[in-house]
Image (cartoon, rainbow, N blue to C red; front, side, top):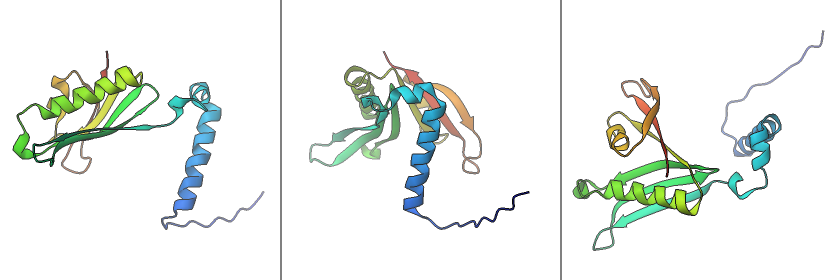
Length: 151
């Protein structure tokens, strides 16, 4: 029997993180024909997608930060300043991001994660369906993942 000795470490190490990401990507690519077909194509990379709304003085009134990858829009952040809520800025931001993703980047789907006290109803009203619910993430809060078919 072969005896192996390992040492476990817990410090944050960006070089090892990057190496791990590369090795996991290579392993996943070898295991998946879909991911293998993406390698070397423009769809392989995430492209940032940002939409901003500025008030008359040029101050940030709201914004959406996300990215597109393959045929998906991923909404990471959507925020509207409290003073401007109720003016449909959130809807306008989301609609513009979906338009860019669909018309300019060929996306067919969109996804977002939100907490129960944030905006699950906002997204549902805009055609998103709940596909995942995680209670107590973090404790006392429920996280929702929602998706929408664009088009």
